[in-house]
Length: 105
Image 1 (cartoon, rainbow, N blue to C red):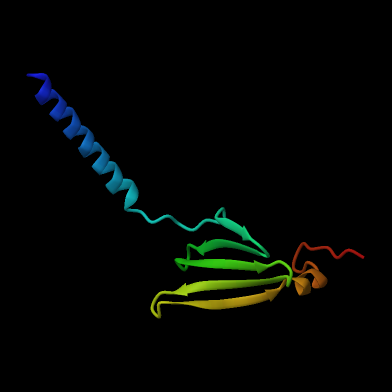
Image 2 (cartoon, one colour):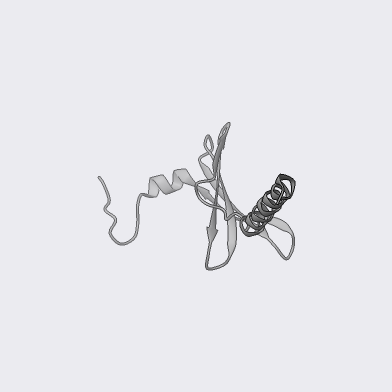
């Protein structure tokens, strides 16, 4: 076996290994995780998902206005829908609620 055939064999084997790696790793879409957070100007934007519903959400916080808005991509209609808007000041004023919460004076 001469060095030319050996080099062709090594390069072919390397190409096949890289192709398999790209097909295995590149075929899965990246899930949206809460670690994907961006702060730009007066806004904080992060993503989350619901494994039960197989849906992904975008959460936008308007810091000066103290508002949280939740968006979801509507796949059948190919558009983004606003799911809920929350006034964070109202949540802060009402305090914690539910079992195990304690009210401070």
